[in-house]
Amino acid sequence: MTAIRPPRLRVPAGVLVHAPAMAPSPASGDPLALVADALDHPLGAAPLAEAARGKDHVAIVVPDPSRPAAVGTYLLPVLARLARAGFTPGRIRVVMARGIQPTADREDVERTVGREVMQALRPVQAAPESPEWNAEILQHEELGSVRVHRVVAEAGLVVLTGD
Image (cartoon, rainbow, N blue to C red; front, side, top):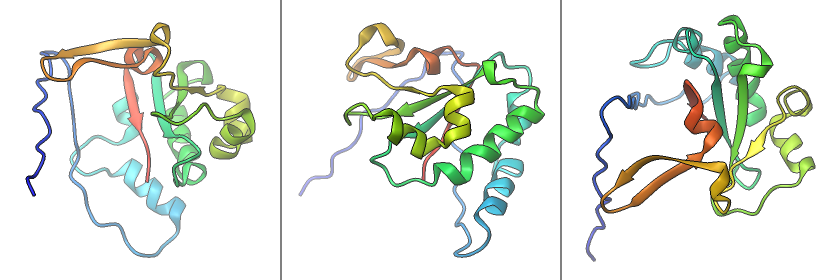
């Protein structure tokens, strides 16, 4: 069996990509405390509130309801840190990354992000099948056009989440 190697991705000048080191998480403990510690003391990166300062808009990408993720545990601490950095709800967008999954109904989105987030931030869902909602962020010789939801492409800071 031959291993498949992913194509190399050349990131254009001016695009900053940061992949923090992964540390094993404790097997037990208070989930909110673990999230707070990770947001305030990330490995090899600035705390979230500090990283957000000076940015116009933040996009928080969350998994769609078909993915098992503790969005309800980590989303509110993320929002609290952004609020401390001076972000009002109008400067924060939540984008549900659904990939090839069908669009989730309103109840499933609300169950995933929580009623407060649903009402205050009105999350949007990624729309890969709708070119008008997406923006090209780079052109790759092997992959072709790399496109993301325009809310993500236009954000000054993108917070990717998941379990």
